[in-house]
Amino acid sequence: MPKKILIVDDHADLRKLIRLTLLGPDYQLQEVASGDEALTRTREWRPDLLIMDVMMPGSLNGFHTDSG
Picture: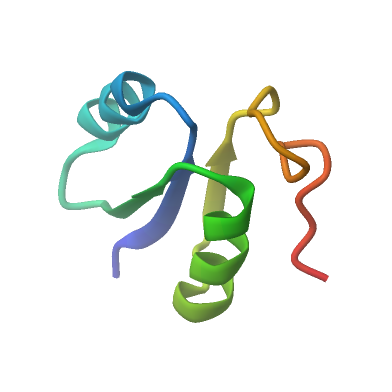
């Protein structure tokens, strides 16, 4: 069964780079652009791994996002 990976970054080009690096049958990949979106998607999709930028704008950057 493929592992679910959520990619979180405010820069589309960096999300694309990570997605292309991991693309293959071993992983299911989804992408979001903010901490708010990451919380929502994590609760809905339940990824096995979260790859998240820690230096995103807004109050929910990689250091402050917490799924509770």
